[in-house]
Length: 443
Image (cartoon, rainbow, N blue to C red; front, side, top):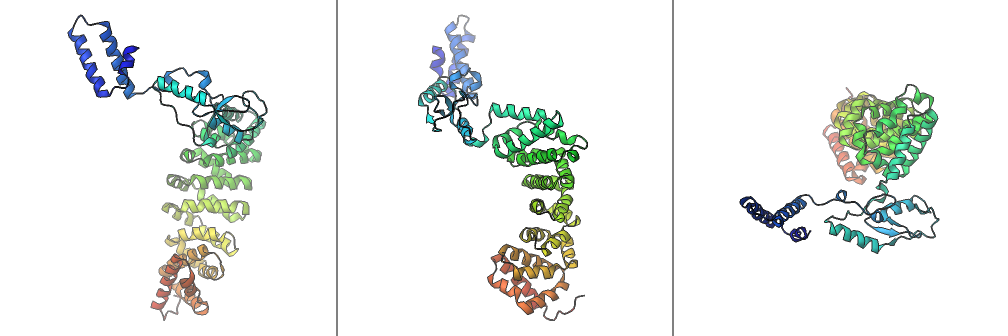
């Protein structure tokens, strides 16, 4: 032990030089001492330590250093009013969840003040220092702390999904609530590739979704809740079963299930790679059907998902081919989600087929009317951006734009008072009109 203590704190180059001397002495002499061999072993061990420092796994952790909740080494030990010591992030989360008892003793707490346990903290620091272990850093995000109790609870609920329909419905309802209010469960669900198949197994049985709409809704909503966690987005979108079941939900679920399926697609489409996967899946067509159905609860979720997906260029063509322009213009004429739908239409206006359809469906008067009547600067900006593309792509529409400008000065007003982008687009259209003063035909 003395030899080991002697080499601790020496640099790697010094250790190598000393090891070279010791090995040479041992190899060159048949009469080397046991002490020389021990020192060579200690030096080699010290070199190994420099390359691979000790970890907690190399030592038996004293029970009094473990948090009773996490069972891991405490980094910030605190004392509860009952006198029990816990790691701060884990007991804080317990309290944040509304518990007012001690996890170990079940005693009702007289107060929820957490007092630092400096004695235990100093003992842990010294214990780590003596063994060359770096003390783990305290957990910063309390809400995402995962405990063994969380793991056991999640696994128990997932097992119930393979039992009777009654057990499935009970487990699905609890999973929906847990994944909504506990970020740690969302984190935990992404740690294992087995979670998704287990979660979706009841929906894989023929007829389950149609005969048990509550079960269907709870499981799809659980997928939505889990998709909020960034680390789950990629795995969910790359699992064909997840996207397939979300599309099934868009087609055949209750209105709440369809809405939550659309919301799940929206959250998953935050990743660019997922936009391509979802676009190829055929989901856009069913999102447009949901938008066209006119259920207020679901339309906004559908519109948000469509907008996100259309940020990928390849999805614009799919969206236009699936009939988006007609659906969007019909909703706007009904004064429904005008801001949101104009944002989608502005994205689609870079596609020639979309411009052609807007011309055929008399979009120009609608867009000019919104510029005149809307109080939303965002709506006016998107309208004039679409009109700018239309008038430069289809000169037959210049006549009705000119008539509107002559009668109401709509674009001139926007060129003076709009956002910087709106002013730029309005001035561009006005210049176009001025270059074609004698245009009166529509052929």
